[in-house]
Image (cartoon, rainbow, N blue to C red; front, side, top):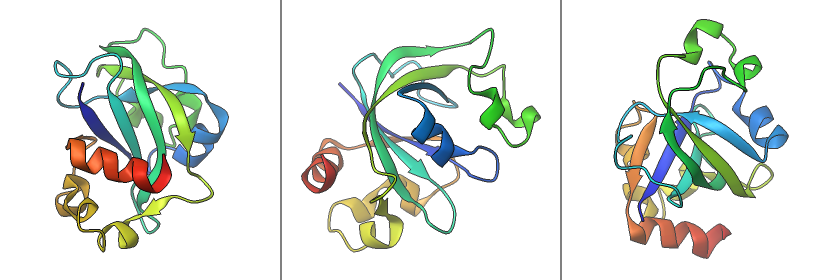
Amino acid sequence: MNHWLFQGNPKYYRIKEAISAFETMPWLVTRYSKEMQVGDGVLVWIAGADAGIYAIAEIIEPPQLLETIPDAEYWTIPVSSKKDKPRAQLRFLRKLLGQPLRKHELKQDPILKNLLVIKAPNSTNFKVTPDQWERVYQLKG
């Protein structure tokens, strides 16, 4: 089993609204698609001024191209929806919208300060180590 962090940018996608509205949702996969499997854990990160982990989820369908994008209305710029890219279907296990793990807090944590999204945030999908996954569960699981 692998663990991932999927990043959403509120400039392009109304991510907080989508997390609130959906129990399951597709998530764009730009790298590591061949490594992602059903049952893998996912931390959902929102970029921007209030950056942090806003949900814990699991992959329930492996990355694949979708004929229709069920969450298309949440993309702020329709061309950004990248219909030609695969998406993994996620099921939310815990929504942290009211009490996210914010980036400024994570930077103080001896384990989570090394999340790749903190060091090099320019991507959509990141690997998470087993220790980082366990630490999030200690704090919010």
